[in-house]
Length: 327
Ligand code: PGA
Figure 1 (tube, rainbow, N blue to C red):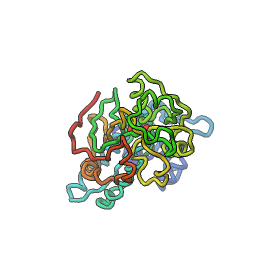
Figure 2: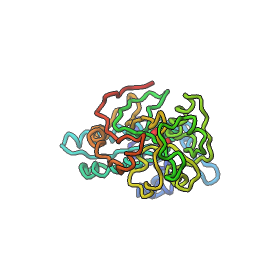
Figure 3: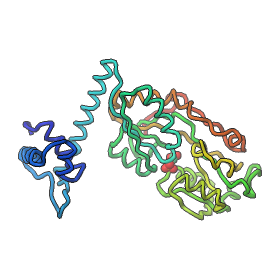
Figure 4: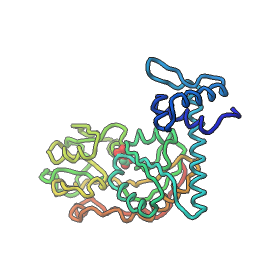
C-alpha cells in the first residue's frame, strides 16, 4: 500500500460512513467518477475488495472493516498532532468529542457553555446515551472523554472523579411517607416503584443497594427517561430514586419531596473516563483540567429541596483524589 494517498483513505472513510458513493461524493465535493476512480486505485493497492453491494446498499468486507479501523487511528493521530501544533502556536484549537450518560445531561451543557466561551477555537460534540451504550462507545474508542456515574468494571480505563452525585428517594409531596423520619429500606421496598430502563447506571445503583440488603423492589413501571419518571411521581404512580442533579432548574420541584430513608442518599460521584493507553489530545486534557475547576460552579438546586431530610449539597470533588486505572 505504499502508493496509497491520504485522499484515497478520506474517500474510502466517507463511503464507509455514509454507506453510499453518491453521498460520499457530495460530502467531499467531488464528482462520482472521481470517487469511483480513487476507490479503484485503493482496492488495487490493497489487492482485496473493500466493499460489496447487496441490492442498493453497500457493505464493508472484512478487509474494508479492518481498513476503516486503521483509517480512524490515522485520522485521530493527525487530529491530535494538529491540536498539539496549535497549542505550540499558543492556541487551543480542535475537536472535543464528549459522551455522557443520560443523567449527566442535567449539568454537562452548563459546564460546556463557559468552556466554549473560554476556548472559542474548540468544537465540541456532545453525545448523550445511557450507561450501557456509553460503555460500548468507550470500548470502540469512539469519543475523547466519557462522563459516567461509576467506573466500568472489566474495561481498562482511567477515571477521575470530579463532582458528587447523590441519588435521592423521591415521592409526590402528598405521599404518606413524606415528612416521616428514618424510613427503613424494607418499608420503601413495599411502595410501588418507578425505575429506569435496564442498562441505566441509576438503576444499577438502586438495584445494588436493595440486593445488598436482600430486598426486592415493588416495581410498578419501567421508564427510559428521568423526565418521564418525575412526571410519573407527580402523577401519583409511585416513588423513585434519581440523581439530585435531575432536579436542577425543575419547575415541578414543589410537587415532590425527598424521603428520609436509611442509607439515602446513595452517595455516588461523576467520573471523567477514558480508555487506558489512550493518548489524550491537548483539547481533551484542557477540558479535563477545566472540569475539575468548574465542577463547583454547577448550580446548587433550590434550598427547600436540600433541606428535606436525606438530601446533601452537590459538591465538587477536589482534583484527582481517587483517580486511577481499573481493569
Ligand atoms: P444513567 O446513568 O443516566 O444511565 O442512569 C447515571 C449514572 O451512571 O449515575
